[in-house]
Amino acid sequence: MNVNIANSTQTPPSLWQKALDQSASGIIVYKAVRDQYGEIETYTVQLANHRAEQVLGIDRNEMLGRTAAELFPPTQATTLWDDIAEVIETGEAHHAELFYKISRTQQELWFDLSIEPLGDGQSAVVSFTDITALKKMTQTLMGEAILFKALSSNVPGMCVVVVSFFQKVLSATGDLPGLYTSRDADDLLGKRIVDVILPEYQDDWKRYISTALRGEEHNFSDHWGGWRCECYVGPVRNERGDVVMALCVYRNTSEQFRQQQTLQRMNNELQQSNRSLEQFAYVASHDLQEPLRKIKSFGDLLNKRYADDLDEEGTDIVHRMQSAADRMDTLIRSLLAYARLSSPGGLAQQQPDLVALEDLLICIQNDLEVIISERDALITIGPYLPTVPGDATQLRQLFQNLLTNAIKFTQPSQRPEVKVMGQLVEGKDVPEYPDVEHSQTYARISVQDNGIGIAPENFDKIFGLFSRLHGRQQFTGSGIGLATCKRVAENHGGFITVESALNHGTTFHVYLPMGIKK
Ligand code: ADP
Image 1 (cartoon, rainbow, N blue to C red):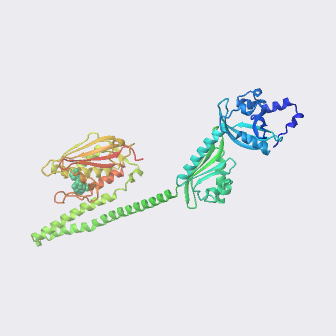
Image 2: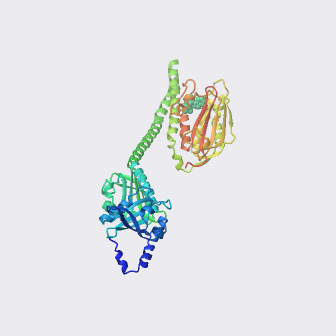
């Protein structure tokens, strides 16, 4: 564009000056000063507007007629003067961004610079707009954009698509989900978002994007083809809070979902196999009772009717057969009782009773009257035995097993002394057990004896089904008692621990939650 100053003949010069002074850009007209060989040496200032005075910090009257060499002594490397020369010589305009340090004010500024030829082969109009603030903002934004791009393309399974206010794709990084027409992020750039989304999903996505551009946020899970992911679609606002873009973030959760499904399937299979096992234990022990009853009654018949026909050895054999049948009877009953217990967690779904443990333990003490008097055992019940939510029948089984063991596992020469004590403890104060709920309050019931004790290496073993540490001759039993105690405690959302040392007595601690399991 050539500026035709000749027009100024029709417009009063004062009006031109006024118009120039209104401009937000600094404007200076330079005229070339040539040396003896016709080469441009410097420029004289022909005209300067008000904004130029402000930016350069020089009064207009001081500038007019003076040369650039006088006004702007070379203190920095700049191509400005060469660019002006080229415009004058070639008649071609020049447009660029210029970084310049103003010598009077010492300010370092960025300018949007435009140099236009005046058409006389001698002069050029230089106009410059201060874009320092804009430049700084752009640099910050670019830094953020690089960081954002690096982040989103380096996080595995993450994809980010940025959509402009006019619903065009501004940026796309990462692995694109199966929702898009292409897997290559570059294919999306500059296109309308709806045009790059598969037709069957377009309606939904039109809605997500347009509402995001109105400020709404969407968080949801979805799946397209083999892709399953968590999505976020929401607005991007400028510092004034206006929505300027929409952001779509996709996190590929396909692998996580597959793993979850495998885990769920395995869990179901495990539960099914546990149920079958329980059913088997129940049916087997139930059905075994009948033939066992027959064995026992035939043994009784042999004893009663044929006692005279049996010699001493025969009588002994029948006697041993009867006692084996009795042991088997105990075993089958215990197994049946164990199998009848509902699976862990089952109780949490039912409405539990309130069980007063002190009353329950006094009842158990009465039931165990025979073995207590046989061993002359000293039983102390309480203090502080609370009332807990639970199943009275199961809890009776638990404490009966513990009391029986406490009396049983003492040296025959020793008088059993058993104490049952209660205490309320907070879950966070029970560090030794992994399944403890820290927010729960537990009733801790401790059953302490002065018996033979248990070596610490056997602590885990004793809670297993059919685990016994001693021979039948030494102590009778089925090896199911503690497994039952463990199952009952777990059914109540609690657990059982043991503290002991060989020959120094044993204490079993039963933890039962005071609140219903959450
Ligand atoms: P059992 O029918 O043999 O009593 P349990 O399951 O009740 O079966 O106990 C398993 C094993 O743990 C017992 O055989 C015994 O060796 C040991 N035990 C259980 N309670 C005590 C105790 N109070 N003192 C010492 N040992 C015990």
